[in-house]
Image (tube, rainbow, N blue to C red; front, side):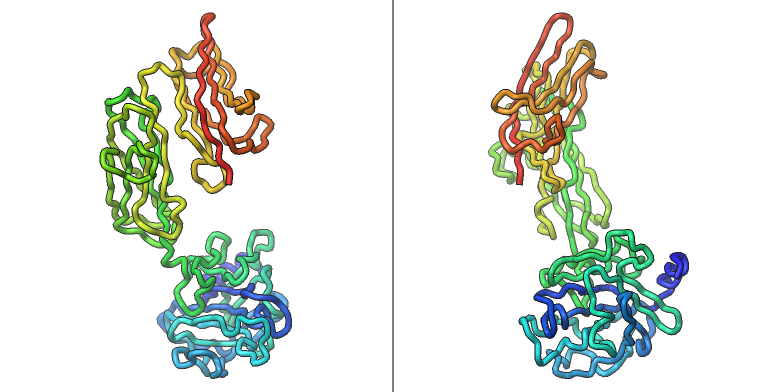
Length: 421
């Protein structure tokens, strides 16, 4: 089937594959959890009851007919719909492995799922779904009328799905009406690892992040002078955020908490849709001593690790050539404080400038800039790697700025801590 035709059929499908469990928790083998606890969740987004009798499901190796689930030994049968293939509008069906209620089950994990109320249970006429789902199997749902819904982009075998979401973790469709693309699937975020017969975890996953903090003017003013900064809040989750709060403060005691006398400014935000970012401006007074300017989200959400960001403020007045934006940073790939910003301020854009990093043994580790400065003030960055491209080990380093102009040389150093996880 050509890609264009497949996309057209998917767009017209009345039933959608919304969740796939190909790697159930537990070990594999006959009568074992991985052999009997696979499932495929379906959703009817229409306003019409649909009969799934005669529909087929395939993993690319075998094609099975969907049929009604009739085994009433399943747990809590009273809250489920059994013995029929009719799926109500805006409701879920779960296609179970026929051996889900196997009385000879081995390896534990017997009937592990708690289905949403009113879930229609279905199964297939064979002993397995397809040829037994594996983590690299796509899934294709079809009907005689031409409906087709897919998981794992079977029309594109070169992309990154299907793959293993993790032991006991399902793949969930983010936008149930969206296409079968890599960006529209996510490993289940629910602590149970899956949500069969219930709305997918991504629909309610709230995650706000402090995505940036910076000074409007890279040149820090003297103590007591006005200081203007911006802080950015991004919705990196899948659910809209409302009524969130952000505190921006000068953390003079280093406890990462706004206290009395730390110029705390609290902003209450409105609606922030997934993918949106709001930039806030805060007006402060430059502190008398070096302090961290912090931005902290005050609302609990799905990932607290991205709720905080800081910027080290070193008041001007000493005639220093440069400042560091952080006293420590951690280039570990988590997206937080990945690089160190070195902001230099020269008397004029002449002469030569070198920005170097040394370890405590006095050995030069990296050169961040060497040559004639293009501007009197600018910012260069250290990503925590040596000049050879290797990851520098954790520890204390010295950032050194050497400025030569007209026979005069000025050299300054500031310490920074490189953290590694």
